[in-house]
Image 1 (tube, helix red, strand yellow):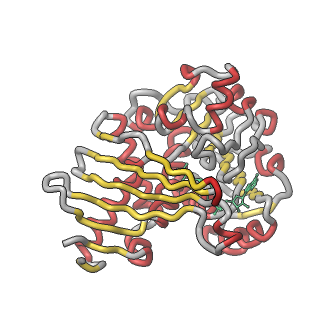
Image 2 (tube, helix red, strand yellow; image 1 turned 90 degrees about the vertical axis):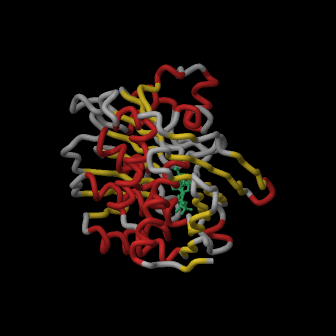
Length: 325
Ligand SMILES: NC(=O)c1ccc[n+]([C@@H]2O[C@H](COP(=O)([O-])OP(=O)(O)OC[C@H]3O[C@@H](n4cnc5c(N)ncnc54)[C@H](O)[C@@H]3O)[C@@H](O)[C@H]2O)c1
């Protein structure tokens, strides 16, 4: 029998605290070498400006194995009133192979990505960070803000989106939800300048964040560019960062934020200081001074999905939620 969980059921079982716990554990297991995670496999729907991605992973210490199938269609929210990112996750029992669960992965993708940003902030941003800037106010803008709330007591969040309606909807709904002072601003520059934490989460194909917008001591969470065609960071950001941390070197070097600067010879692979898992297990140190500039580049890992889905599955079994099919 296989347990089926709808998005509503997954939502009832997973909050941001739980997602951060699952994702930090997944990065820890990666740092310790206890995972198997082959490269992602892509199908390109060029005529629809979309992709479909297969993401398998096995976390050996948890005995959690599974596959996420996720599609990314940036025009979905405006054209079809659907999320840009849609996913399902299948968990399999590594001992017998049988499928344990099939569940919505759209909500898990949103939450595990906000959680990855939060784990980056936990280890790399200033402890007393007070001001944050978020650029891109869709699903990820919300989830990154929820993640931030769990790890830092910020007082002011400046937010920017090229779509004024998205900005208004974000300010209205998130001010109520998080209780921070959320201030809409009119440019990337305004969101970034003077911010201790800068979060970029757009599907932009052109860099918009430059080194001169970033102050000493800032931490940047670069979330949006997860394919070779997308790019948020100008090369000057990479040059200005004292510590560049990525979720997974192999994936990071092919996404737009790194691929172009590497091709131009502006940065070298050795300029990446660490993978996040190495910092979580203490093999490499996180932030060491108040004025260093840190950057975490997230590309999204299958271990985040499998680790989070496994937590949801265990809770569902404990609480008798979902239906066997
Ligand atoms: N790194 C990861 O693990 C990971 C996981 C999930 C999604 N993503 C990526 O994050 C990005 C955002 O995903 P989402 O689900 O939030 O999408 P979304 O469509 O819900 O929101 C994106 C928002 O960005 C805004 N935007 C687009 N270009 C902009 C620009 N140049 N400046 C400012 N705002 C801009 C849009 O108006 C929209 O409001 C996508 O590229 C997605 O593939 C990455």
